[in-house]
Length: 358
Ligand SMILES: [Zn+2]
Image (cartoon, rainbow, N blue to C red; front, side, top):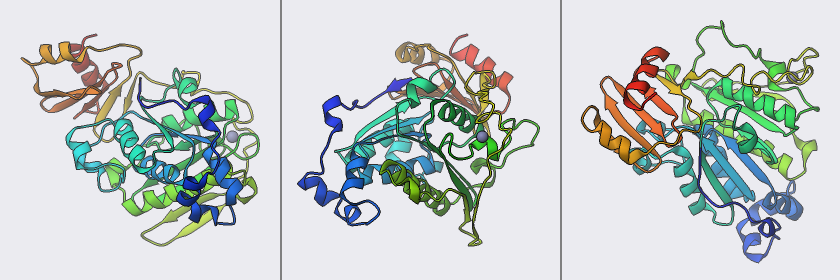
């Protein structure tokens, strides 16, 4: 795991809405739902965004502009050309340099609003690092693309009592729900936590996704986050919102708490306890992620050793990438790897062993 960016100093947290900030946030302060007091609370608040794809990037952009005091962005992936159609924080240079999304996002967000403390963390949230990455934030926002991570975040949030906001989009359709442990249903009340045997899930990699739906869902998610952070809980919509920007269908339904929910009623945290986390996971349509814990790689040495056997070897201090046709491997400094061009864990494992070491 790699953390860049500055931590918020203790004294720095108490920012008052001084004149410069008052001008910066004036249109928000004028809004009756926030006012001076709401803005002050935003300035003193903290948010962690899990996943910085389209929804995460749009949410981060809005929150940083709104003046939330401290933001951490956790993402496991790097920027690719196919992201740019909807992931509004990134540009062609980020994709050309294959920058980790957390790093590219941190740079962009700092240039948008230098009075916010922004930290990008290149990591995959898992049962072992969830506490370190997510604890202590006022709200956790969903920017992930998979249910494994969502159920892990749900476990963590319910266990620790932190609110989190579920958000997802695919094709032209998306949905979001605000989860306040102890007060509202949780994600496991809404969906079965064991997704195995339910067939292939439709994802952005299989049926695509439109920019407008991810930005709309991120907007709904951030509006809820702002209400929570500003202490306006009574204004939360309290429903599962769904919308389709192609058909124009919008829905909001009241979700009931499941009285037999394994997570928020029985308090069984299977995803957080690690039992449900496999060593190798699918990551998009045609790639596999290999999780390696606390293994520090020497990129310079690795680059040298790969020169003779692999093609297009390159590194950017955050990751090392190379091709062994038809596969492409991306290895991060902590040993985690993404193998593109296969769905087969055995192929990925053997490539990892051969080129990175076992
Ligand atoms: Zn529940």
